[in-house]
Amino acid sequence: MFIITIDGPAGSGKTSLAGLIEAALESAGESVYTLHMDDLYDGWSNALSDELTQRLVAIIEQGESASQITIPRYDWHLGIFGEPITVDTPSTLIIEGVGSGQSATRAAARIKLWLDAPEEIALARAIERDGPELLEELLHWLVLEAEHFAKEQSESVADYRVKSAP
View 1: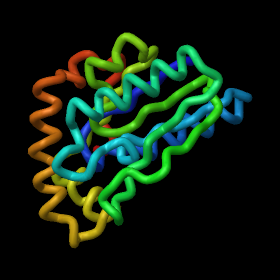
View 2: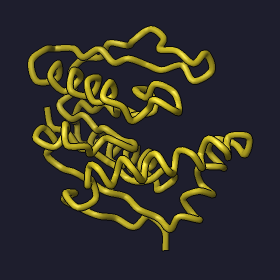
View 3: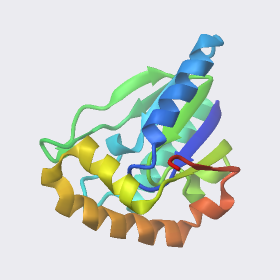
């Protein structure tokens, strides 16, 4: 399984880029699955945890040794993990979202991308995506992701760095 990680701050365009890559690979005949980190986070406050790392590692290990992978899915409305989904192991797995480029994924990732955007543009995109009622959570998230990025050094080990806004 060929793994691509797309990491970077909230609102930098990771999901959009993942969609473009997935479409291009599928049009070339590849089997592709995009794993969204939002499905793996345990809510806002326990998102970037050791448990997240364990979930990521388990998915990667399944992809390396099994014909199917089981993916937990967090239900943001209920605030709990719902039923996991099972998908056929794709030839390419795109992992996109904050934390996808952490040290636990690096040995398996064949391409590590880092997306960035000016903070004010990224925050405006995140508010537009998630809604202004989540502004307080988003501002807290910016602190959590900054701490995570400082610890993991994801940007410095990326194979490619992309600015997603002028």
